[in-house]
Image (cartoon, rainbow, N blue to C red; front, top):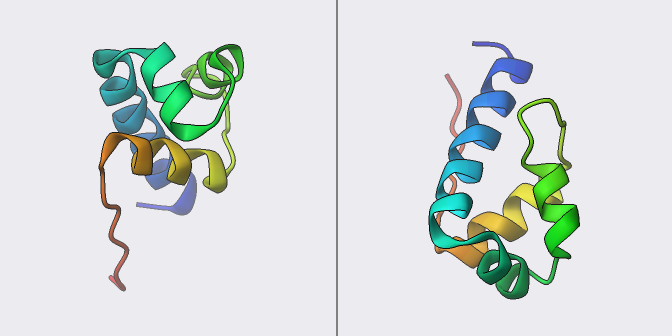
Length: 68
């Protein structure tokens, strides 16, 4: 799996959890604007790593990266 495929999968999974928890709540906990969060989590977007990490932290998700 290349970097873009991994990034796309990680973004979509974090986005699914964020939507399930409520975007307004996640936006508040992450310090991001609600509209910005909606845009960042759209399937066609390419959010920055910082955004994904802030959302993951707000959701209590720990991301782990290791060598293949």
